Image (cartoon, rainbow, N blue to C red):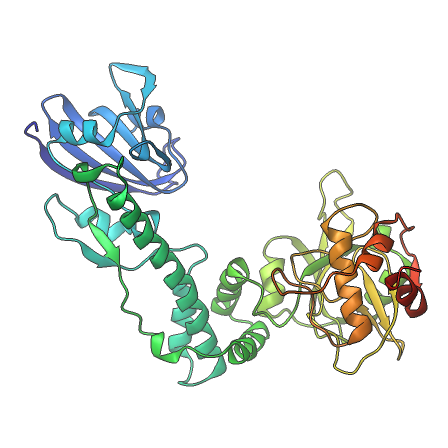
Length: 421
């Protein structure tokens, strides 16, 4: 090993005024060949050549990429003397040049304070995992709520799931590299481990309480509630009180969709309204009085169409009320169902798998499963991945047919198709 000296590191944000456009940490070693900078991306992937223009005292610049080469995470390197030549050294080569094992952090452990404080030879320290979606706003809100409240316990529970999943993955990544026969071996050191100390672990709760807490959170209006719902939605919509998202455009609406639009009621925006509203040019916030689902009206939702065009974005129910009886299915986007008491609903569906018809694929098969369940039990839950739902070959064949949009299929039609008639 050559003699070298660690010069410390620098953490840079994506908006640092340079053209790099990524967030990263650069550790720097003074070596006989000049300064070698090793870059660990934290958000985005910087290009090694563009970094030479920022780190002007650097002789060699190495970016640690996310995907793997033969001996570990791939290294992208460039020398100032020949910046046009990008090459991929081995970890053992890099360790030889900096005079000792090279640090490597899983993405989840690349925290600014820890990275900038690290020095060669330091013992591994516990680090709170950095995740997307983020568990931290959920814990922040939970701490503000009364002990035992559904909102508090729901936020701790989902935050714990997010953090635990990422911590387990980070630990697996490091153990995989340690046990990999062709891996970096002694050329790599792991300066951090996931922090397993969890202040919310004692307040984890059941799915039912999580659902109740999130339902309450959806009706709030504060900024932190919005941030929490953004992260919950990015993690999984499974625990939210509503099903999958759908949209209806005013200029291209069927009679049944117009029926749904006309029953919407104006309401002040809630936190769940705002999760959508901050993405689009929102012109109205509503509630569906039948399902309780929030609805937003936005302008210019689709490119290459009129910017004044109004689109309504809502959420389908996960299930219809217990005891309802399916009367008909209307083929539209979304799929609609009407019960024997005349009430119209978006068909129960999650964000995935989706419902559709008119081709040979998963959409018609999922619609067949959904309709089969509703024929047996009007209050059945929407189809989800891996829920063990039974196949509906008769309905599956029926929904592969290219029925005209707006086609109404009565219960009699559906029962006959189900039996293969």
